[in-house]
Amino acid sequence: MIRRAALTAAAVLALAPAVRAAPPPPAVSWITIAPQDLLVIETGRGRILIELRPDLAPRHVARVRELAREGWYDGSQFYRVVDRFMAQGGAKSVAGPFDSDKPNLKGEFTVAGVPATTDWLGASPLRRLSDGTTFARFCPGTASFAHYDDPDTANAQFFLMREAGDSLEKTFTVWGRVVAGLDIVRGLEPGQPPAAPVVITRVRVAADLAEAERPTVEIADTASPGFRAMVEVRRKAAEKAYRPFSLCDVEIAARVR
Image (cartoon, rainbow, N blue to C red):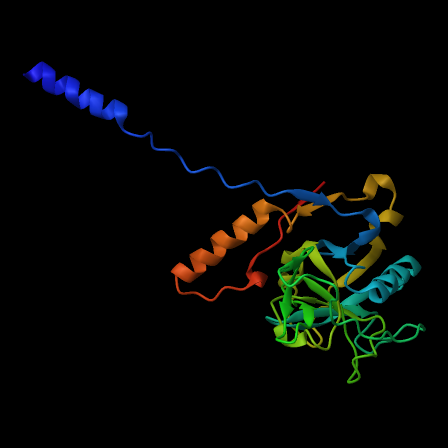
């Protein structure tokens, strides 16, 4: 009887369906930023790398490239740094000059032609109004131009977001995002002006640098299944913890070499 019971238990185990392990999540894919779309800002604190976004703001990106190639930003300062908001730079001193001799730029605030199901365009998450108007969001690291009261008066002064700022979407233009060096931007001492403004020693488009000093940057492909799966994991974790979730909370991973 004992032997029969043992055999019966073994038979039951043999017939039981195998427990299958959950498939691993898809890996995040990587894309390489083209050298002409990579802005290199050198400071006494280190290097800040920005992906330029001509797909979002072609006129603003053209202006950034033009000023960088002319050396306009070399020797300028981060002369206005607001805690938990942004760092503004591009002037040689707090007294200016703030504008170049080039004409002011008309704002490029909205994003057109993006499917309603698309939440990301490159490294920029998107926000849509009820009428379908779409904006690139002002997440930490977003690069934009300052302007006067008229939103079509952007010229040369830029700012980098230290934290998210959704209120800027409708009147300021997103032309890039910091992909490496956000810790430097966040580490700038606040002040209007700061007691000791950090100097921007040089700004160049990576394509214009000698190959030996040109960085290569890969960033997470936000259109890849792996990235989307990672975002959903974070969204569900926030919901489970009853915490608000924003796409601006998702930092874009980067590999620099």
